[in-house]
Image 1 (cartoon, rainbow over the protein chains, first blue to last red):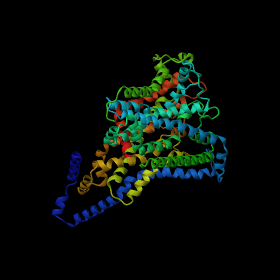
Image 2 (cartoon, rainbow over the protein chains, first blue to last red):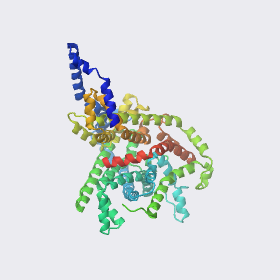
Image 3 (tube, rainbow over the protein chains, first blue to last red):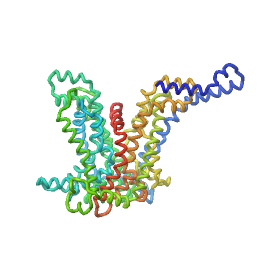
Image 4 (cartoon, rainbow over the protein chains, first blue to last red):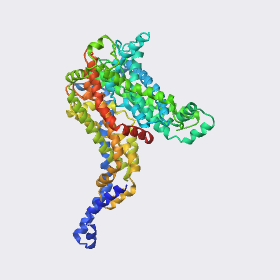
Length: 336
Length: 272
């Protein structure tokens, strides 16, 4: 702060001929200072809006307008190359809802999402609990768990696509090595979901553990002391005190991972070479379905209908999450 | 918890960290063996001597250097722009009085929950109208300022800049922009660094939007990776050498700034 204030004083000093003006007022100077006052008042009034306007302009342009315009496109016939066609009413929605691949994609998306979010939150909580101790080389451990986060989803998908290879894959070689049957990771629906979910889990668990860790460190230490006096063991303390106390943070992580998880694209897209989600779309997700309709089938009208449906699904999921966690909180008698 | 951790804690943590490293090591392992070794069985557990051969083949198979240049250009520009505009708006929301400040800030926070990715179709139509499909403008312009950035900088600047300092600068005749530049920017530096890092990484790793707007001849790194794996037969020693290579830039960034990344995630969690 000391440095900052001297800098300001120097700046003030540089704009300095204020005092001579005051000593010898003539009409030109008075006019100039009135002009300056008006300018300064304008500055105070208007400049804040100028400062915040880039965000609002850009959001209008690339956030709000596209979402609204998606609705417009979705009620028209609209080809990728031919552009806007006739008004179609809800026809695009009807065609989407009658398409079995839409329901297939919805099932896959939800299945992959559940397989990736539930274990991820549980493991991240445990990991945060382990990190919330007086470790040696604390920063090194924290950095190490974050390592997967810097690997881009596309690279993760290529690596895991190989690790989970149906033939010569590492996992299957290990399974056969211990006398088990190999699993057809790219063919069986559930197996492919497990493989794809494991990519998400690998990349995000450490990241979420650090968020939980931060919340855990904000829990007052004397709470633990009194619990220890009451004879609660460390695992007991963790399950019945630490986790409930950081419930708002858990909810935050669950909701953000819902918004991201339901839009999953790169991992299933790159899990095989064709990029359509398997020979029978075993792992085609909603965003992949949207992409296929828009840029393969070249039907932007139908793709827009999918975008709106996906938007609604995300909202429903977020609200349900919120309600469940409220309910859980009410049952426990704590509310965050 | 208060007691010193025992072997169990260190053991579990070590297992987790090994799991975090294993896929990367595997990628390097496969990328360092010749194709012939791989078609027979899982490679031996030590790296082979073919990494540079495989990497060279990967670089030749796709426009690798162009992709690297594009990724650096887009991620660097977007990150710098996000930091500038977010600090500007964050300063106004934190320290300046103006009509409608609170509702506007609430609006910014609300937009955080809007999955704007779902607006890709109109965005694509707009980009096509502007003639930006296939160019880096289509990646840079939509990302130039984010709600998260504005909110993040606002939260930081509320505490980091004392009100008296802003007033003193005004009394001394500084314009608001000058006050911003001389008072807020120096104070914002730690948070700005973190915001820059995370924006850079998010832009670097983005896949969906670049796949839609970029042609095969002018890709980013992520799109070039996708091209490596196209075709009926997949040569994994080539693909994973490429994947390993593509991880290097962010890995270097991670080694240099990992502590700040950890601090950033933990701060964001407490404040957000």
